[in-house]
Figure 1 (cartoon, rainbow, N blue to C red):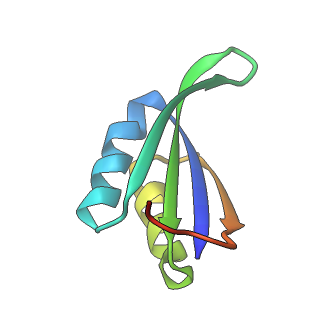
Figure 2 (cartoon, one colour):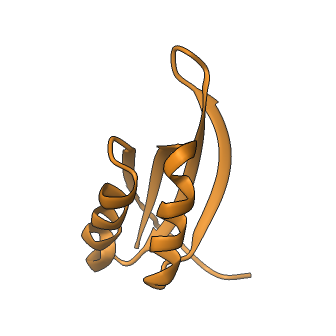
Figure 3 (cartoon, helix red, strand yellow):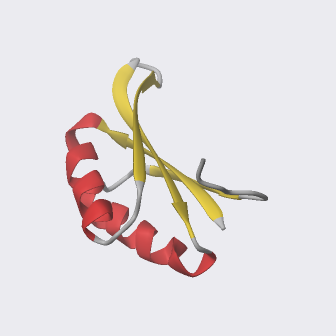
Length: 80
C-alpha cells in the first residue's frame, strides 16, 4: 500500500479530484499555501495499492501538469 501526496495549483485541483474519484480512488483534499509567492495550492492525499501508483500519476499528470508527487510506503492502513 502507498500514500501519494499530490501538490497541485488551485486551478487544476477540481479536475484532478474528479478524475481520481471517477477511477475509484479515494481522495482527501487539503487547502495549502506555500512557495516563494505564497500562492494557494491544493494537496491531495491518495491511498493506493502498489499496482495503482502509475495509474494515479497518469491521471494527475493529465489534469494538473507540473504538480508535485510524493509517494510513501504505508506500513499499516485500516478503516475505523
